Amino acid sequence: MSYVQHVEQFHGLPVLTFPPYADPTDLPDAGAVAWRLHCGPYASDERADSCWRRFTGSVDLGKVRALVFGSPWYDGEGGSGPRELIELSSRFTGLEALFLGDLEDEEAMISTIALDDLAEILDAFPGLRELAVRGGDGLRFPVTGHERLRVLRVESGGLPPRAAAGIAAASLPSLERLELWLGDEDYGGGTTAEDLAPLLAGVGKPALRHLGLQNGPRQDELAAALASAPVVRRLTSLSLSMGTLGDEGAEALLTGQSLAHLRKLDLSHHFLSQDMMLRIWTELEPQGVRVNLMARREEEAERFPELGTGRCRYVAVGE
Image (tube, rainbow, N blue to C red; front, side, top):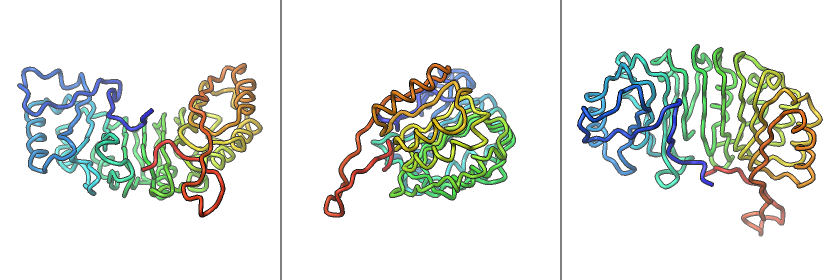
């Protein structure tokens, strides 16, 4: 399956790509859809400016609840973000959700989608409730955080450890769901449990109920840290999916603190043995924990055999 596709639903709303030549009278109510701004992977700046002018001139911006930005605002060429949006923040008075970097595999490698410091976006929209970003190159997150953000998702093939550490340390008192795709070290990843220490300790995010530390090459290490992490006690769901989890990490989870309070445990795309899978089901399912163990993977031979004869695990989304 492909994990990197255009979003079809966002913030509980169907996503509608703004038709640049549409009759304004044919458009839906501004708050009924998540508006997607996307001009194609090879759109010029002039075409993007025209698309933006038509959108802001045709739609009641005060009613817009959700926006999704694709190309060329985020095209892997080092763009600085939707500057136009920030400049018109006073008109987007009802904006609740924002998705940055909505590009598919065919349009840009996820590791090349350039982001930036998210401080300006968060400052410009104090009422924002949901923020999703795809990419990671150049991403930074302010430790000052945000008062009202409830959902934060970062989809990355290589999340910079500095960005992950910023999110872990950020003050997000309303945050209920956090999903981080950590990504491959070859593409800018490398986040460790130590980088996530404030998050694992339960600091700064008292409302957190779902935690996803996904697509990581160090899932066994993270599982061992989660086995005693205070944050787990307040969760209703936990995900270590899309990564390299093996028997060592699963053993740590099973022998650590109780997971019986969880409703869901997502371990899909893993490298567990059949015996360990059976053990997980046997121990957790009777306690009411719904466990996802789909997409079992086999370790592959090293890409460059001349450098060794070992086996390797791989994340679901890298380049």
